[in-house]
Image 1 (spheres, rainbow, N blue to C red):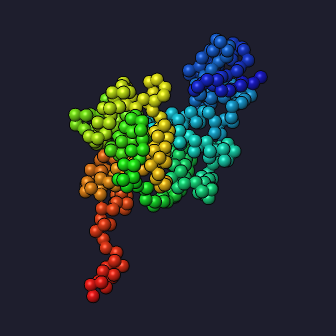
Image 2: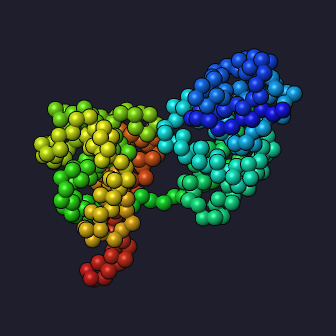
Length: 356
């Protein structure tokens, strides 16, 4: 006699157990159990502690997990991990990224049981990722995901996670000149697409922020855009330029958006980030710009151009929604504001020579 536990529906597991009065009474002791009439089978919530209870109740039975091995990377652990991320209010993107990194980690170790993983296993995995040429930002995200798993989740704090984080690359952001931004905007003929790109550049928005803008977020009286629940779950206001506002008014007359400022192809949905990226890529190509740039480059350019025009760094930090001023200070390294005032020693030598 055996009890079979297998995947059933989202968040639930099917429990196949030989019928007997005794077995039914045992199943009824599991919290959240349910008799599925259509399939004539018992189901329970996909939770680690419930499966542990099931094991105890049917200790005389051979419990078979035919999804993946219990206590290794399985649906139960991933579901538990996902719940923990949700409870801590992590964004959907972060949840998805963390779960993907953790799955890759356990796939690499052939679904070894979590209790058999040690600190050196984590170190060697991160080294492997770096040696394979993964971007440091990607490896750092894997580091954060694994640290969360081994130090923050229930029952997983089995060793001190004193592993050094990979050092970030000190690369400067790519920036477009004012003329290049103008060329990109001029290359776009579709009024909706033009409005999207103008709003991104004029307000320094992330692509995810412009995609999720609602009509109610536009404050035309005060020339402000309200960004709800941006990165780090923070709200903020940023600029709404007069030029962008006029473009939005023209756009409204034609498209008449109701809920989302920029509606997507599916009814009731906002435009996707990928659609915006495609609009930008097409415009860059048409404008004849050969730099390696992305939509996010418009945000970098917004900050840099403000700095070059004399805007205080603290205001730029607020507009961008940066928690730390150190993040904003990187734009001082790409701004031409002060470089134009500095004379190269070669120019000075040649100038002095001509004066003699």
